[in-house]
Structures are given as C-alpha cells and as structure tokens.
Length: 125
Image (cartoon, rainbow, N blue to C red; front, side, top):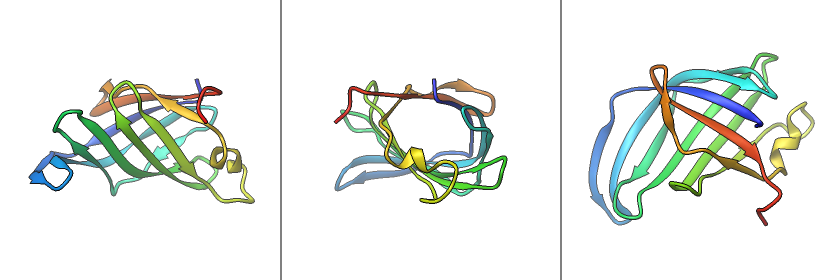
C-alpha cells in the first residue's frame, strides 16, 4: 500500500448524454490521506464519471501534504483497472510520484464519501 485516502463528496450533477457517453459529475469537497504521505484533499476537484458501458472514472483533484506540498492527482479508467497519476514538484520530497507506476482500488464506502487505496505497481509499462 502506498496511500489510503478518504474523499468527501458533494451532490452529483447529471450532465446527461455527451459525445463520450452519459456523464455524471461528483464534486470533491475534501478528505484525508494516510500512508507513505499524510495530508488532506483540497476542495475543488471532481470525478467526471462516464456512466455508459463501460463505466469509467475520470477524477482530477489536489492533495496538500502535512508539510505543505501540493500534488496534482488524476485517477481514471474503468472499474477494476484504475490507474492514478501524480504530478509533484520536481525538486520536492514527493518527486518520486512523478515517475512511479501505480494502481488504484475501486472506490469503496468511506466517511462522507468514498475510500480508495493506491498501490505501487511493477506490472505497468
């Protein structure tokens, strides 16, 4: 396990049919991080879900670590195949996140929203 996050969510908003399928937007309102790094999830992100088969997640949001670093998170893909990517400051303590390979659990029930766990992977190219 690399990181576990508990993400709080706002009410979803249906976009309806779009060129990429039926869309649903779920605002990300905050949350907490634990594991290799600790911190919080900042308000302002969202999951731009595609509900048409195959259903997919397309979440974009920010982490703020306890030592003040900001990390951009994008977690996407179909259920059972979520692949997160991270963008951290190149000369910062979390620069290793920029080049690592990671997998994400499917969202599960969490306090005020959903919980996810991120894992390091050596099986991705």
